[in-house]
Image (cartoon, rainbow, N blue to C red; front, top):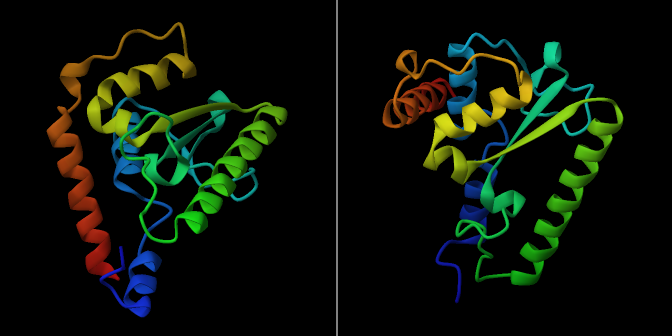
Length: 168
């Protein structure tokens, strides 16, 4: 199957893919913030520049996109039909890099929590509960009445993304 786009257009489109402030990241950050957790983003001094860093809990959260980070068994972890060998090598490098970064973070004494995009889309509150259990096992259960429902959470992320695009 041939690519319907010119190489220049394909390159431009691929260059528009963001590595930070993705919708899944914004959703999780919003939920954590609403629960009173404060964090820093993409700390340069840590291996792999983790998406979310909770220094107080010595925990980093990696929000992985299923396609780029190869979530096993996920229907979003497909291989493009064109240049399959290139993509398979790229994905293998991504997975190896992720494993190396997680090992280095653990060696430095950081707890690593991986959140997958599909899990966050399916049930953001369940993901939040899992993350909070990692942060503080003795914490009181989250009062979900104070949190928005799944549709509202994703709508807020879309509004923030739209705002960021308007500013470019």
